[in-house]
Amino acid sequence: MTEKAYKLLAIQENITNRSAKDLIDRGVVYCLGKKVVMARAMMHVNVRFRVEEINKVKVIFEDENIVAIDKPAHVTSEQIAKKHGQKLLHRLDKETSGVLLLVKNEEFREKAIREFKRQSVQKEYLAWVGGIVVDDMVIDKPIMTIKVKNQSHSKISEDGRNALSEVTPMMIDGKTSKVKVVIKTGRTHQIRVHLRSEGFPIIGDQLYGGKPHKRVLLHASKISLLGYSFESKEPKDFRL
Image 1 (tube, rainbow, N blue to C red):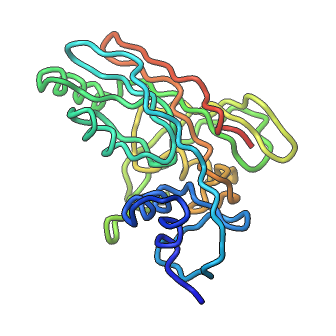
Image 2: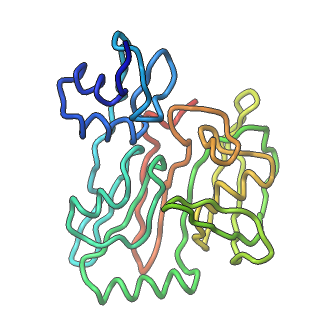
């Protein structure tokens, strides 16, 4: 006998069907050691699920202009903005953790957007990638983004927009490496696409050739603009 995964999860966890579907969509539900990726997948009624804990959203800093958030993986930027009642200054992908900025007034927002356009905002990321990175890299390849049914996919293309990523190796662990990536441009999936183009896909980033993992191992560790500078420590789930 079978039933939809989200309905079985709702019964197991004593939560609503909607809450169960949201947990599966966030990517934190596992069955037999594998992530459940389809909420409507038919599964045997006797299956048992394991639900990964989602880290709490924390406020790093707040003043009259800006709210700096320490974003956990598995939560969308839009969900955080809605909860705090403020506008997003930029976005992080759902499975990317780290510093996320919200703005509290239009005057500051306009100033900040100008800084982004001037490429005066410095953003530092950490990533675990497949392969051994031993040398610094400057990846200067244009990126084109295509949206289909509200989903974005980017690729290297001469018809794309300019994108520059500076990569510094930090650690090697077997056949994987931890790297720091500094960017001034902010193209959709820029770091993910650039690293893949050099043969170093991010662990967990199956969309761009990375090995399966419980999350995409990309962390926005630091951002600096308009005299502000914010940092986020590596969360516990940012590990192999």
